Length: 367
Image (cartoon, rainbow, N blue to C red; front, side, top):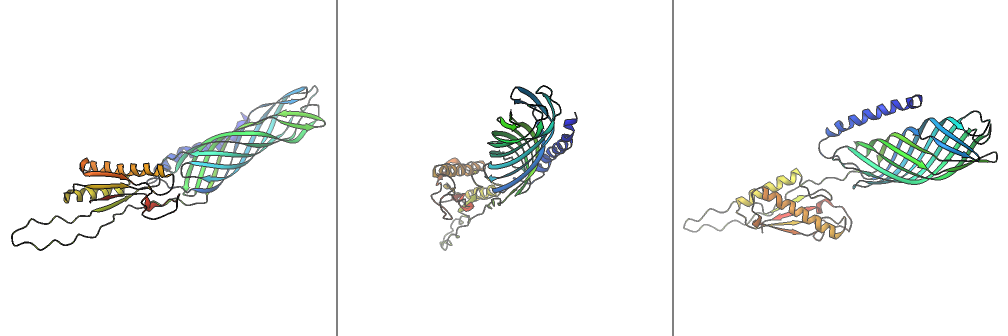
């Protein structure tokens, strides 16, 4: 039980944070816009280090650990699709609690086992529409293992103080909470495992590996800004010319003046109507009924980010979303024609691959 006491305080703190974060996230109004771009992160935690066997020539030792700690510095890039590749540098140190078996006449045990790791890692953040985001990750790399005055393993009184390199891999999972668009607090778990390293002392050799479970807390800062959300607007066409003077005989009253050209905008890679866009489409239905409009043209558009084929499909989904909403407002399907223009008719000309909010739109016209 003593070996787990140092873990109680950080685990209780982590559990309290995990309980509090969902309620904090639900208090936010609408989707949280987090920054994308390069980032740096720093985390630290407590290790459960797996007991291991040490093969020292003809002597086979069992080695277990009492406590251990890990610190990790990471640098990477966060994309808005959830991917977060990174390079991690970590350092773990674990106290050797007891050594069993070993050579005849062996006495004493102790020392530390250390691991310096350099890992290439790929993480994925799950977007929840709130400040709270779960993540998973995996990585591979190199571990520099160090037996720091560990013994005796191969002969009485012989202590090992040597380094060796070994292949390493890790998996992890956890949560991040955006306290600001460019800063996250993190709570996570990592499992690290390595191949065996070979260590030398007094002409003897010892072979062992290293693996640990680690509970981590940390902070991450992103050097970028969240994408601005465009506001849906209405483009009003010039008013029609005044009607001709009435004939001497009574003539029917002129049709009411209505707007004949509308535009709604969409978020990046989305075909979902915002509340502002729905308000514009309610005006479309009102004016179409007031003006007895029988033909309504709906054309979907996309910006140049992504492939032309994908943007063609995205603009079709945007046009269909507008059509379905107009049908829900009482207009007839025979009144509405739908066209997808992809990235071929840009409101703001840009180079290929540019995210331009003004080009992510659907235009509604009464011909």
